Amino acid sequence: MSGARNCPETPRQRMIGMMYLVLTAMLALNVSSEILNGFTMVDNSLHKSIESAEMRNKDMYADFQYLNKINPNKIHEWLEKAKLVKVKSDNLYNYIEDFKIQIIRLTDHKKTNDSAYVKQILGKDNLDNAGLYGITYGNGKILKKKIEEYRDFLIALSVNNPSKQNMYKSIFSVTNSKDGRNWEEAMFEMMPVSAVITILTKYQSDVRTSEAEIVQYLKSQTDAMDFRVNKISALVVPNTRYVIRGGKYTSQIVLSAIDSTKVPEYYIGSTPIRKGFYEVNCSKSGAFNYSGYIKLPGNDGSIKMYPFKSDYIVGDPSATLSNEALNVVYRGIDNKFSISVPGVAAENVSVRLTGGTIQKVNGKYIIRPTQDGEINISVYAKIDGKDLPMGGGSYRVKYIPDPKSYLQYADAGGVTRLMQDGVLSKRTLKSDGVSIIASYGQDELIKANFNVTSFTMVTIFGSINTAGSRLNSRMLSDIDKLEGGDLLTLKNIKAVGPDGKIRSLGLVQVQI
Image (cartoon, rainbow, N blue to C red; front, side, top):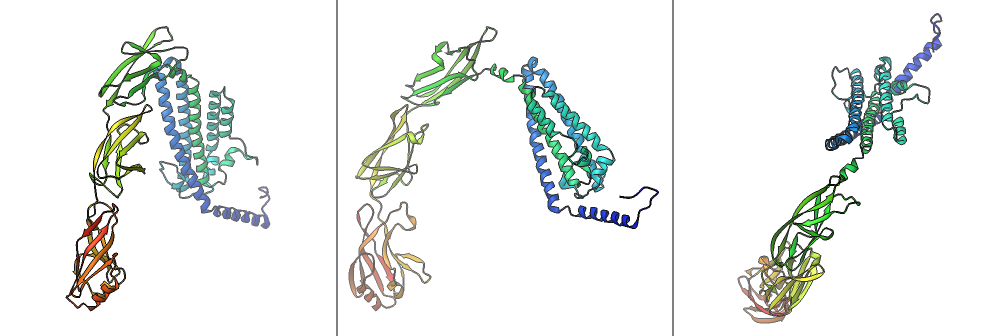
């Protein structure tokens, strides 16, 4: 932009230089807060990914150590390579972490900084300090060389896996950019600090991910799975550990890993059993234990024995019945029961009834008696394809209790009220909605609907009978003639419940 040292700048050249500086400053100011916030979000997400990768790697190294402890002759060589991977990965990761910290210190003028998160940076939009530390101070070249060395190390370890080699070449590429700039210039020159820190965090995430990839690859090279198959244990697999008397207990004794070229022998005590199937006819109740062993030829020709033991319970036939309402059943209403058999799935339980009807609704049994006296409930469980009786019970059949009679009316606020004895105005008595009802009131133990069929009204003017539950016109006329203090009695109240029984209920008395 300027001429040689012995050729002073013209006014036009100085003006162009000033305009370039102003434009650069404007570009710096135009790094929007949304973009900076975006870098913060990406950086936070990368740190979480790094944490997950480090936990996964820790478990993988521990598993590698465990395999080496069991079979050091086979695992040791590969474990040493995995340890070297950890050392080199930690070295590059920690160098990048310090690289980020130094840039942040330059930007925020802090003497100390323990971590390098974008969210902690004050000068996120600073365009100078990343280039200062990475290019001017020469640290970018050092970082580039370390990345190349780590990449080449991973490629050398995965020599028999071209796809992994290509992956590492791509992830840790530090070639020149398309516009001809070298990697350091493209990475740090005129780049916001928040962007550079985020990209460096991405390199750290790539280090941890690649570390996991290469360690898993080394682990697969040990043929560790062959070793695990040789670690054999005996298992007992019963169809159930709870058996109803009369049923059958069945279990299968198996090896957790099987070599198809060797046929194991199974024993309960000293008695051989065919193909590992153990069956017992269960004629007695109680808890029972048994043990045995499996014999299998080893690779060296010796016979290896693997002991096992297990237990099972034989229970007496039983069923659990509970009436969710009362200890009796009532005619005319739904009696809800919960019925189950311990150790048997609900779909394998069936119920039979004499003296009524039964229906299963939402896992409950609705029982309605159709006779007086008693009903009998029998419970069955389907076991091994057979319906076995589990027990049952007899329940007394009763008619539902008599309800009480009430005068139902609406108060001045429109709220429905019930009354058996009290004071009411003639206006309230003559209003719409006044009727005689039969109900259990607030103390109801069971739910049932009753219909009032007839009643008698007695006043100083005489008695009037009516059908239904409402006051008729003659009754309303006599009420209109009453004066304050006069009594009105409703008696001979008849009601019919869901069981069909006609009931005579107590009287209701009202003072005007």
